[in-house]
Image (cartoon, rainbow, N blue to C red; front, side, top):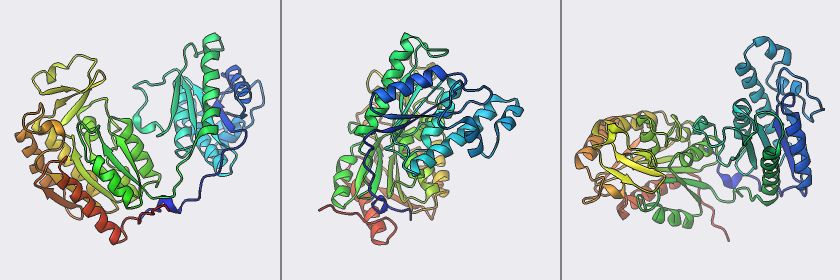
Length: 429
C-alpha cells in the first residue's frame, strides 16, 4: 500500500526572497536569460541560471554550467557533441537538468523554476518541470505554448505556460513584455503558493461536470466526512493526465476512476485525450482503485470545428462552444471495454470495476440525445468478457447517477479501509 499523504512532513514556508532557477541555453539565449534574472530580482526573487546548451560557449558565467548538467546525466559535453544528433544530445541534457532540479529542491535551494525555449527548449523544460512535485511553481515561456505538439503526458499537473511572441531570436519589445510577466508570475507564485499540506490522505475522483456525471456531489462529502482530502479531476484531457501523474508520484491514497471518457477518446483518435497511458498509473503504483466506465459511450470533439463526415449520422451533443460529443459505435464501445480489462489486469494494487447496467452518463437516459440501449448492451457484454479476477467485478441494476451507484462505490472503499488496503482517514480537530 502506498504511503499516505498524512505521513508526509509539513511543507516549509516560502523563502522571504524566493529562489528561482532559470533554465535555458546560455549560448543562444544569453540576453533573454540575463534579462529574466534581472526581472526576477526586481520582483523580489533571487535568480540563478542553469545552462543547458551543448555546443556553444556562454558569454556569461551561469550559476550551474552546462558541463555540470552533462555530468548529472552521466556523460560529457564532448561526448554529446560527438553524437552529431541534437535531439539525442538535448534529451541527455534534459535528463541531467531534471536530476539537478530534483537535487536542488530536495536540498531546499529552489522555490520555483522558470524555463524558456522554442521546440527544443520546451521539450527539455517539460522534463525539468515534471521532475518537481505539485506545489513548486513552474513557469515555461515557449514559442509553442498551448500547442497540440505538446503530448499531455509530458505536462506537469500545475504547469504554467506563457506564449512567446517574437521570441525565436533575440530580445525585442514584445519579448520583454512576455519575459517580464513570466518573471513576475514565478516570483508571485513562490510567495503566494500554499503547497498540499498532506495532513489528510488524498483521494482522487475522475468526473465530468455534474450535468453529465453527478456522483461526486455525494462521494466527495462522504469521503471528507471519513477524514479524507478529496480532489475531483475534470476528464477533458489534462484532468486525467494530472490524476495519472499524482498517482505515479505516490500522492494518492486511493483513486475513484469513475469517468474513462479520455480512454475512449484516445482509442478513437480524439484530441481530447490524457495520453495513451490513461488508466495505468494507479495500477502500476499499486494505488487502490475503484473504476467505472463513466461517459465511455461518447467521443469528444472540438465543437468549433465542422463535424467530421464519418460522424455525420451519429447522435451529437454540443456541450458548449469548445467541446461537443458524438455517440460511440457498438464496436468502439467493445474496444473500450476490452482495453479497460487489459489495463486493469496489469494493476498491482486492489482494483474493483463497478458496472452500472442502466447507463453511464446523464445524456444516455431514455429521452436524452445519447440514449442507445443496444450500444450499452454491447459494452456490458464485452466488459463481462474482459474484466476478470483478481479484479472485483460488481454489476448494479442502476444508472451511474443513481444513489445506488455511490452506495456501491463507498461500500467497496469502506471494506478496503477496514481491511487495511486503503490508508485510514484523519479527521481534523
